Image (cartoon, rainbow, N blue to C red; front, top):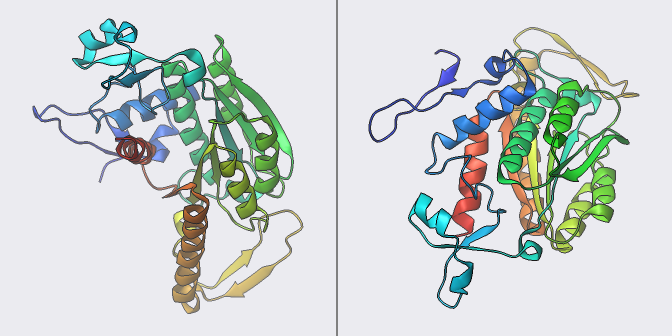
Length: 311
């Protein structure tokens, strides 16, 4: 196969490409990567990423009987042939917080891009899409502490600063996603969107409770669980020396991976299922992906699911 996936429109014309992560890495800048991912995602949807309510946070909603007809946006009617009404600012203000785990374990990537790079691509695409909609997005890079924080803004230049920060992100330190969520929980207003990107490896016990707490405050919470394919199924055939990647983790194991392959796959699947169930109980959206999947397809599935649940 080549380095992309391509589908056809109803008329048979090719849609924009959903590039593989390693091909996205070859693009000139994070800004270009974000735009390509978003355009690839919308290749499989019936909406234009530059024309409106892509993540369902923008300033219009479809007209329903009883709505004030004076608030119909006739320009939108002309574009999409449906009746939409404008919401007041206090009805539409939803800030988005993008939390990217930048701990040492996120630096793993034996063949393709690292987990941190992949998470940065996804965060960049969401930030780019939100900026196109005029919705404020912020960024937190964290390990055991907050490494960098950019509050949600819509001012000119903010998206550039956010993408530059993602471009410069590097893996180091231990992971403390619960602490990061607690900090955002003190900042976020009700109706904020909080999106966490992490591998959940050695995640502290308080993370599940932190997810429940921030969701209970009326925020919309999404957990992107990002793993390398090697962390789903062991790919090694020869005796391998495994070692911990987090600081102060001195664990080492010299073993024939073929003896562990089946139990490793079961444990990895069990980990994902535990977190899926934890998120379900907390009313948090759980999205699993590996770093081998085209980011545009992951973004498309995320946006499509949000569209479907709001119908």
